[in-house]
Length: 165
Image (cartoon, rainbow, N blue to C red; front, side, top):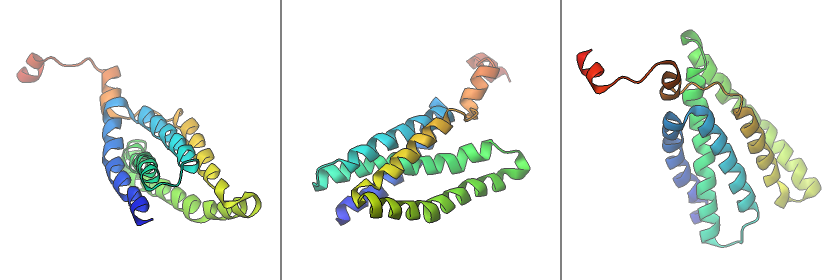
């Protein structure tokens, strides 16, 4: 059991660095959509996986990569770049606070209701629905990645222009 649960730490560690890094290249919106989609897919696969250590470890590793990478992306670059300079801390606090209220307060109650009425094996569907809702909401994120925003508003400089500046 400990080996399987360690996948959360390993996958999350990599995801918290790599998902925001990928968002610098492909954009915040695209990284968010792909990560929510990846989370949804791997929640479903994990919920229906055979009970072997390697399959559970691998699926939980990838699920944690996407899910914990999303936490870093949403509470870091997206929250910071979406607010005016004087409200960045409040923006980050709002995102983190909403996650704590739902993830620490509301979701456990809903999971308990689902487990009591439909069986504990069905609690994964709450997370699955949450990931799909997050993916839909991500389509409405205003792109803030500097590389993407600057690429559409300014022409790229040539090497000579940079050297002469």
